[in-house]
Image (cartoon, rainbow, N blue to C red):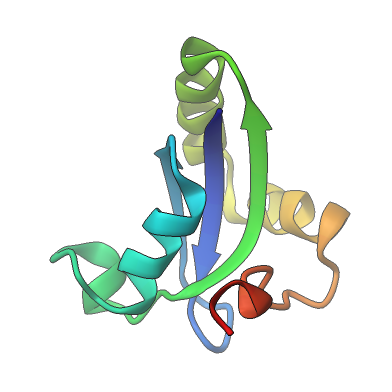
Length: 94
C-alpha cells in the first residue's frame, strides 16, 4: 500500500504533504524528529490527513496535486475527514 499524507504542527499553521509506503513508520520518524528537514525544523508532528492506494503512480501524482493546492483547499481537504484537526495517529504508539 502507498499513502499520501498531510501533517501539521501544534497550532495547524504549518502543513507538510508527503508520500510513503509505510505510514506508521513515517509518522513515527516525523514525531521523533529522526529525519532532518522541514518537519523537524517546524515541529510538524501531527498526522491530520491521509489517503491510501495500491498504485504507486497514483499516490505520487496525488501528492504532486495536493502540493499545488492553495492553503485554503488543503484545509478543506483535511477538514473533509478531520474537521477538528486531531492527530489521527494518537493511538498508534500506546
